[in-house]
Length: 201
Image (cartoon, rainbow, N blue to C red; front, side, top):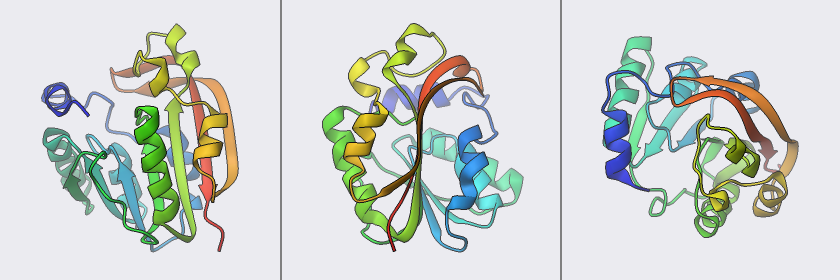
């Protein structure tokens, strides 16, 4: 992750992805078992972790950007919730095995080899019955100028994610186009993949 670039992006006053949670996550958060801890990968400015904390989850947000996580803590304070943050590059962060009731990845795009490594840790990191929620841009996003990376190898398909999440049961998997309204950085028509995957009990 280009930490300096993200620190510079997050250093602007506004929340570049907005302060409200991702719509897909907000609509399906209840699939995560209540009372258990949740890990938010590439949490950035905190909108998703803060939302989950407001629902009563114990949330840890991991991101390489200290600036982004500072804004996440400020948002949590304003909303009156607790959010634990860890500054770490996901290339180096180890997801503890069998430790999480939920793991969340929202618009977090990695090179294929690193994505496979992180998703293998996701599979191992979930407790039995735990849920993984992901929304990401697909290669179809390259025809839009509404957010996301421009390198096609960073944009997964559902078929790839199904392979890389072997060991979890895919209970929802879909590629679609939808209107994304998440701050100035994600705004407009977009091509996305959505996944909910559960670890067998």
